[in-house]
Each structure stands twice: as structure tokens, then as C-alpha cells.
Length: 256
Ligand SMILES: NC(=O)c1ccc[n+]([C@@H]2O[C@H](COP(=O)([O-])OP(=O)(O)OC[C@H]3O[C@@H](n4cnc5c(N)ncnc54)[C@H](OP(=O)(O)O)[C@@H]3O)[C@@H](O)[C@H]2O)c1
Image 1 (tube, rainbow, N blue to C red):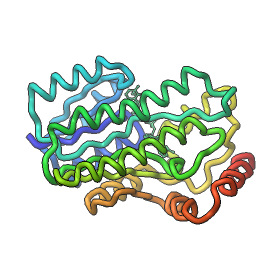
Image 2 (image 1 turned 180 degrees about the horizontal axis):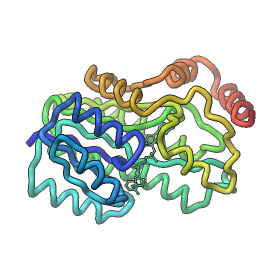
Image 3 (image 1 turned 60 degrees about the horizontal axis):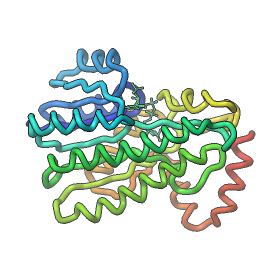
Image 4 (image 1 turned 120 degrees about the vertical axis):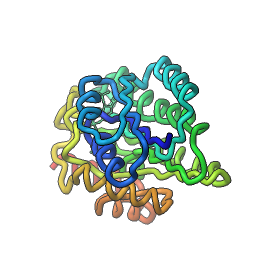
């Protein structure tokens, strides 16, 4: 059975990827992963394809035991893996709790890597992995310190893995969008001790557009997808403008 697996499936970008995968990629089925079971159920009900809902907390080791057992039992041909589960908290080092910082590392880095390593034995030539990163990976960002560091990990991990998988013909793309307005990430990020650490999100894009461009870029086997104009410019400028200058600009912009 040719399947796609999507994490972060219950909202935002993950949910949009599911819609576009069933329209454009036409696998035989989709496995969807997030914690909120009712949301997964809703998606399964509206899907034209067989959907397997897996309500799992990916920061828990037991989630991977369950996934490994299921993969071993079903032995699917995973054509597409989208690792979209992730979250942010805004504020400086005194305003984001140690617990939230650890959770960001656990979900954005460890869980993404564990998902990739768990699923890879079930992928064959031509399969694709989309690691959902962020344009915050291109430079350190005060007030999103830990979040942007987790995304720098995702970029570096994805780029190296892509070369390691060259012989197996499996494509890896790091998807690095700027702010997206119609997901839950910004509201969750603001729920910290300083909800005003970043005041505005100008030129934020929409999940549908990001998912569409990211799927196209992964088909084209691009190592990095910058699916909107701001992330494209950020990636380009971070190669030429000194890092401290970019950070100083960010420090001004986020207070406007
Ligand atoms: N929105 C933006 O501005 C933006 C910009 C750049 C990059 N991104 C990246 O895009 C990805 C998707 O974010 P989004 O914007 O779509 O945010 P979102 O709407 O908040 O979606 C996050 C998803 O992650 C799942 N999740 C959270 N904690 C989890 C856990 N412990 N175990 C399993 N699943 C968990 C959530 O589902 P449950 O709560 O049901 O578990 C939800 O489905 C993230 O990696 C984010 O960093 C977002």
C-alpha cells in the first residue's frame, strides 16, 4: 500500500498538506498524527481516501514504539513523509519557561529526527521527505531564540540527510516559510510571559499556498524550499549581509 504520513495533522500547515496530498499526490492512504484525536477524526471523516488516525504525543518515546509496531505489522510503502508538528514560544530567556524551551527541542528537533529515522526503512526510491523548518533557520532571532535554533537544526539535519540518502534515491527538502497567518502557531507562540515580544506579522502568507509550493519544490528535489517572497529574500540576504546587522534590523522591526 502506497501511503503518505503527515505529522502536525490536526491544524494549520499539516492539515493543509493532507488536503493537497489527497488531491495532488493520490496515495492509497494517509496516516495522520497529532495529539487531538477529535480533530483527526474530523479529517478522517471528510477524506476521500482511507485515513489512519494516530493520536500520538511525539515528545513521548511510547509514540515511536507504537508507530514502529504498526509499520512492522503493515509494511507500507511510504511515498511521502511530511514532518509538520512543531511549535514556538516568543519572549527572551526570562520570558519563555525552561519547560517550554525543552518541549520545543523535543518536538521540533528530536521528534522530527525520530519520525524520519522510524519511517525511512519503509521508503523506497522516489519517496520524498518534507521537513518543515522556518525562515527563522537562516539567522539567530532574539525573542525567538530557542525556536530559531531548533529550526537551524532542522535545516542542517535535512541538508546532510539529503546527501546520505542520495544512493537510495530518496528526496529530502527543508521547507522554510516566513510567518503563516491561518495556523495556530502565532497564538500559541504569544501565550508566554511576553505576548508583545513580537508585535506584528506583516506580509504573513497562507497555509494553502505554502503547502502547494512546498510539494512542488519537493517534487523538483530542491534541498531547500522558501515558499514565499520574504523567506526567499531572508535566505538570499543572510548569505551577504553580516549576521549582526540582520539581527539588529530584526530587533528594531519586532518592536514596531
Ligand atoms: N505558522 C507559522 O508562522 C510558521 C512559520 C514557519 C514555520 N512554521 C512551522 O510549520 C509547522 C506547522 O506549524 P503550524 O503553523 O501549522 O502550527 P499549528 O497550527 O499550531 O500546528 C502544529 C501542529 O503540531 C501538532 N503538535 C503540537 N505538539 C505536538 C506533540 N507534542 N505531538 C504531536 N503533535 C504535536 C499540533 O497538533 P496537536 O495540538 O493536536 O498535537 C498541530 O497539528 C511547524 O513546524 C512550525 O514551526 C510555521
